[in-house]
Length: 203
Image 1 (cartoon, one colour):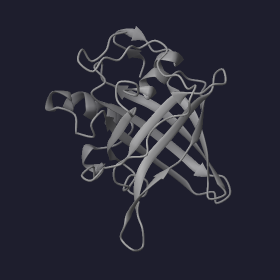
Image 2: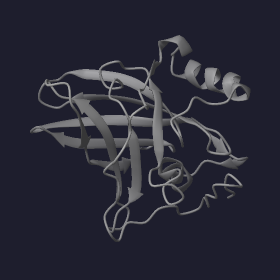
Image 3: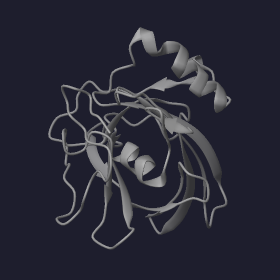
Image 4: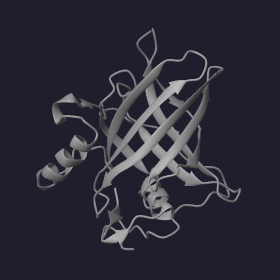
């Protein structure tokens, strides 16, 4: 993604695109569908992106449901440290999960001008296990698929990732109650983009 609303993409704007709807809504984005069945099968995926207290710090916290062996759905949450990549719109994510550090490289592929949807691509590996993975997530503010008028732009964005639309796995967003959201006190959100739910925001 080289531009947003006709303006050259900067790292600050790219971070704001991750922050997305947080502030207007209680979350940045909800995941509509994903390309990796192992990582995108979890129901009710909420994304929280925010700037931390420390200068230059940026965090990502996905909140999602997991089905237990007993068949119950329970909420889980992870916390990723996010650092800027060399190319604008790219970022390095790292997370400690069950004693294993995973490193991921994320790219903002496209976000619509009205923030009605976005496409993020990632690839990563668990440091110890050496297991690599790749995928992409289609996101929107409400977890619904983008409108038909956005289809060609979405297909073009998927093509840049080498993904066909039929390869996406839809996320189950049916039973998403009592979501444990919220971000740490002292965190900040948008730097440049102002988000308004009715006007769909303006820079």
